[in-house]
Length: 383
Ligand code: COS
Image 1 (cartoon, protein in one colour):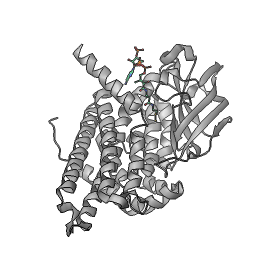
Image 2 (cartoon, protein in one colour):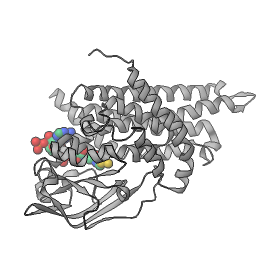
Image 3 (cartoon, protein in one colour):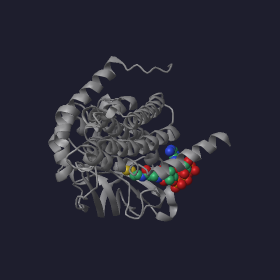
Image 4 (cartoon, helix red, strand yellow):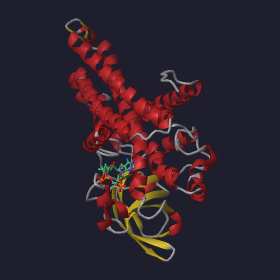
């Protein structure tokens, strides 16, 4: 297929649906949810009703079966209204992706279908207290006993954990095996021995819920294992390859919102007898911000487009995620500068955007890890 920047009629409709939902339902709640840290589950239920959740579940199992570019279009629109709510809404795509990738048709029937027939949340349980970057160094163990695994350990920073009905969990048969021991399991929340921790009091993304998860002699049927024993590391990596691009879209949405606010403000605010937009210092800032937002979106679209062609995208998804989240920080920072003292005040929207942007440089693989992946892929290609 030739490169084409024109969206299809269906994609424009999806984008418009997400834009309206973001403007009418999410945006009016964003500032209050950020302040109180409430988990606005009614908003998430509404997103589910409109088909804005579980975007990556195949139509065969009742999902929307959307491609990665479609997901990115939706994610950018939602994130322009609230990064935190978007994180909670899109966490199902992250959590269900290992099942899409490695589940048998029976597992897909059992685990994916309920998400499409009713509202549920799922969580991706990978990160541990001892480290999020070194996945192969995880300490949560599984031990096989007959037709069950017994899980012991702790996960941290798990999005939606206390509200989820299902976890995709990564644990190891033996930490000494490093990546070859990691195994993926689907664990229903109501399995005895699972305790979610307290909701973390975060700097940003405050409308999403984040907590630890403790597993104490949790018994999970072997039938809930995704792929073979020891295949969990690759399942996690393949999952992240496909979810990092939408994180790039999320960061682009935050940056776009900061640029919009700054541009509008620059037309209203006057100094030295004219709107500040007419001062070159501000106009140049806005022009630089606009270039960065455009470049981020193009990298996101390229990675998503390649993924939709069935191409592996470890390099392109890391570039999209890393670049978009870095520029989101820069653009939000500049937006605050355009607002001056008001930008620093909670009464105005841009300081929240900066706090929300920060997490996009950290989660789904810190930008330091993205740079290592980029360098490794690059060197592989020239070796
Ligand atoms: N797709 C498929 N296979 C992959 C892969 C990918 N994207 N990345 C690595 N692999 C494979 C390697 O080819 C290697 O396979 P072999 O055993 O056949 O040789 C194996 O996995 C181990 O790879 P590697 O040696 O590169 O693993 P490392 O332990 O060095 O870890 C990083 C690699 C750091 C890239 C990985 O741990 C990572 O992505 N960490 C960040 C995790 C993250 O995003 N956390 C956020 C939590 S979710 S909010």
